[in-house]
Image (tube, rainbow, N blue to C red; front, side, top):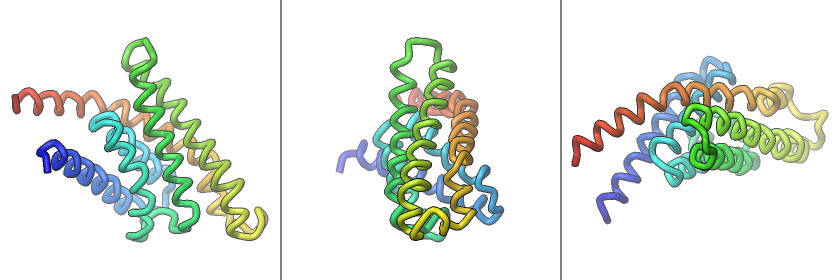
Length: 184
């Protein structure tokens, strides 16, 4: 196995472990806004610091892994929808940061807002409006906490997580560039 593959696997595993670890620490507080914001922050940090493949891997795997260890929502039929919303979130961040021809901070703010809206739309329509009514036999049978969890809260957690990541990324990028220059 090539050294670069081992490095990718290691970096991805560490970022996934950080995401799940932070989720484990905040989940008992039962503050969806806090836990969701941290998850979204980690998704942004993964894609922006380690590339699209790492961001996508974490976006897809994290909901299933969290459910396996008893964190997050453990309604298995909706986990693929959560993964798809994470993938959209990560892809908009990745491509939005590269395509918009303005300064880096403005690019990231625009990418963050669009990514949050995409993630929210997928979760709201896919989970709240489609999957949960099917799972619970109608919209009137869905538990209120689940309705709240997949409503506008998702937009706020994506915006907050992206905002925190915007603040953290310059420090992370500087640390990565220092480490890279030291290894050359």
